[in-house]
Length: 585
Image (cartoon, rainbow, N blue to C red; front, side):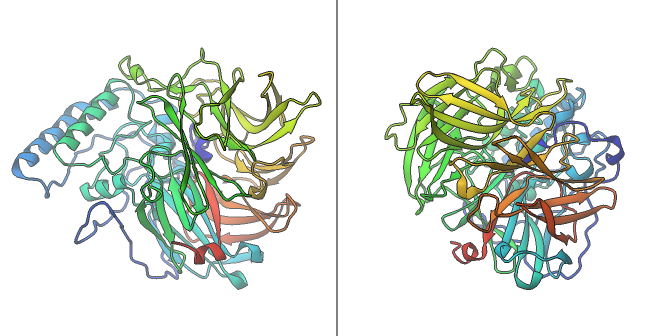
């Protein structure tokens, strides 16, 4: 997820150039109704989604008069709701605004420049293309990101925003269209109906006593029927995957949301997806699809209840074939993991959840310096999930893992090789340590017999985050990985193609004042680097956004599409081919 790309102070020269409500142009628009598909409650008329409220992103939030609509409540419920509104405006909001916010949760920083949100954009056709887009890219490039609908009242972290998907549809003869839509999550539909944010922001707001007050306020509103948390509280803003005929939008705080791409390149939220009622738990934002078997592997972690972690596996028809509890001593943030041909590799690292810290006035997400980081290796055929082989890896925190594979040493020992980006300090994304951020591409070797580990930095002096290998080689030994060059942190100035065998780097630079995000690789031939990498690029000097296609072998640009609207920096993407579009459920 380029989840790591919005956590620190942006350069001051960009902070005053955008506001929360950008101006929208409408040229060559395909008419498309804004759809809200809520499968859990039938309504005669779907709520209208209001535009973003105008508020400069460069100054702290001003006191806000809270106006909730309570038309669906009875007189007693309305009275209780009004009392809760008064408590929020007179006690909770002042409590939040009386405390200085650290940079990772300061909305004047987190929503400045090209991190500021945009409005939905219906399909716009006939976009200008420079160069030629290869035929293998006929389909739709999808990228997820956080895009808050309403200005925050208190703290706001980049991860807190509502999920918005940006789609570039590519046809023959260089025909390209663009659109972006909110994923209509349960919380977004309810907040749109109420006209403001009411669900607690898991990172930006849940700090100390004011965070506890926010939780109590939300519980009280749920008790009187103003909001319904039973249908999920997630934002679906991080990952996307196409599996078994469905495009799924995900964040680890909820079940995935099924989003359909229609024939015009527009996006429609179908609803919260439980894999045909087979699960009822959140899943992380980085599931893995095995390129050989087609199986989908994923994890689910639970902050409140032991054993805290679950491993899930689904076959190509979507049938659940594995559902195993994995015991952890404490709830741990596990944003990503890896697979090999025969194993699942699970990081259990030093970023943990301690809700008791809120009572002491702190954040529930902390860096536990006393904890030993380790990796668990589980056979993906284990019928019970009880035989996890844990190997200690001291002082290691990888927010993302790019690949893993199996090897045998000269002594016959089984070894798992893991490729990831090690972040230091580990809490860079969540707190303000004052230390410089280092994100180093690293090889970690886990000896499953001796329990020994060896760690080697592949590239030094360069922050490399957000990227991938050729997905056809996922879980198998790879030579190349394509990563965003996260300099100047937290923005990305280019794409690095790294040779894992010798550590050499070939860079594609976006150019002065131009920044992008995660590069997505689409294969064309059988060779590992035969294909193209693509992504969005923002020219901050010219205030223009582009979709850029780069030859993955030579790392040279082959095409660029000028986009009609601003595309904010975001998280993770995927590509849905022409054939997959036809197979959608």
